[in-house]
Each structure stands twice: as C-alpha cells, then as structure tokens.
Image (tube, rainbow, N blue to C red; front, side, top):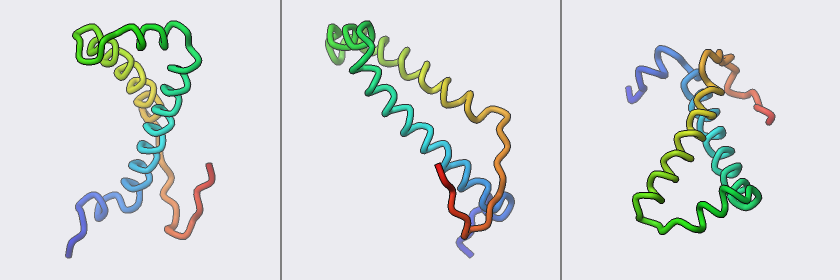
Length: 91
C-alpha cells in the first residue's frame, strides 16, 4: 500500500516532528552564520584555523555538537499536537 509504519502508527505526528526538527536545524545554521559574523572570538578562531587540519576538525566538531545539543534540548520531552492536514502552522 506504500504507507510507512510510522504513518500507520503515528499519523501526522511523525511528519510534524520531522518538520519541526528540520526547522530547528535550519534556524541553528542561520544562528551559527550570524554568530560567526558577530562573535569576535568565534569568528577569529574560525578564520585562524586551516580547513582540513585537526584543529579545524576539532573546532567544527565542538561547535556542531554544542549546536546539536541546543536543538536536541528543544525536543526532549516535548509533546506534539496532531493537527488536521488543512491546519496552517504559523511561526
């Protein structure tokens, strides 16, 4: 029938959670870009490191994990309301 088990079991819940997670990740990338531009220490460190070096990898991994933890905290213990398909979600 070409229907996922998630859709059968959870209905629109999975789609709403996935959309919210994608939006949070996108917002996180935008925030990182703004921080790279406005945070003197972060932008200086980023500019000083050689892409591909171990130090650059360590720096980017640390920043990425910190940002991922921020997104994860937004969803831990969060309950999503299932809305009818015709409902418009306002930001």
